[in-house]
Structures are given as structure tokens and as C-alpha cells.
Length: 106
Image (cartoon, rainbow, N blue to C red; front, top):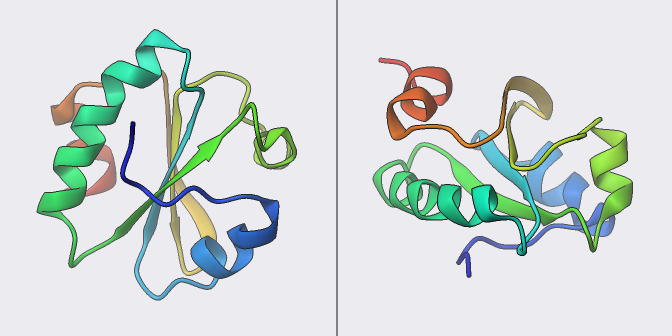
């Protein structure tokens, strides 16, 4: 189980949209195998990037309103928010290299 704070429609605004640091949001479902496989990669990256960005999780089963609002049709979907706006999105299970390339180039 992820150590990331779980956000809901009630907390998304303050924890993601108003965050000072960029926020990587993991839209997932705990029963889905690709989500389970992505989780350790995100955990590792969260430790490496802890001073550069925050990580949170949205359980799409418990917060379908957020999934709908951000048009998440497949899980896992990982979305980067910076300055309150979506900047990057990856859908499906990704490699560590792909995550680094898309969310933290250079």
C-alpha cells in the first residue's frame, strides 16, 4: 500500500492545485495489477525527488468524481500538476526511465 497521501474532491484543491511544489498525482485502483506494479517505482521516485515535488494518490473507486473531472479513463494514470495546472500525463504501466524522462527531464 502506498505511503502517498490520498486526495479526494474535498482536498484536491489545497493539496494539488494550490501546492507550492509540482505534484505528481497517481490515479489508480488498489485491485488493478498494473497499479500495484507501478506503485514501487513511484515510491522510489518520491524518495529521490522529495525536495522537488510532492506525490499523492487518487483511488478512482473512492473518488470517481475526480477521475471523471480529469478524464481518467484507464488506470494507472499519472498526472503532473505545476502551478495548479496539468502539465504532463502518462497512461498505463510505465518504466522508471519513461517516468523520469516525462516528469523530471534533466
